[in-house]
Image 1 (cartoon, rainbow, N blue to C red):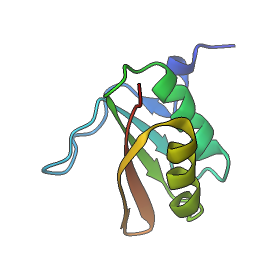
Image 2: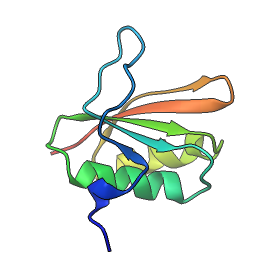
Image 3: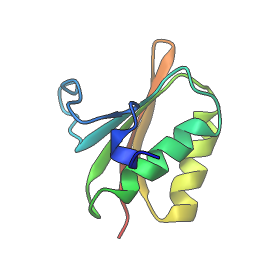
Length: 96
């Protein structure tokens, strides 16, 4: 089994964020259904320091209820979750 950072959904060289958006790591969970976007986000955040920001790209509409609930339960801060065309982009600050 490969370490999580080797998973192809974790983008080490993330595309540049839109103006005003910054993040430390990005996970591309597009074309993946629940629960995979949350599991990928969880794995990525485990390798990040408290306070760092994860960008999560998702195409499954269930993320609009799953991500806020998951952040609350796990002590992370949901900075934003917005729809961009057929996809959602979430920014999550890792809790301490």
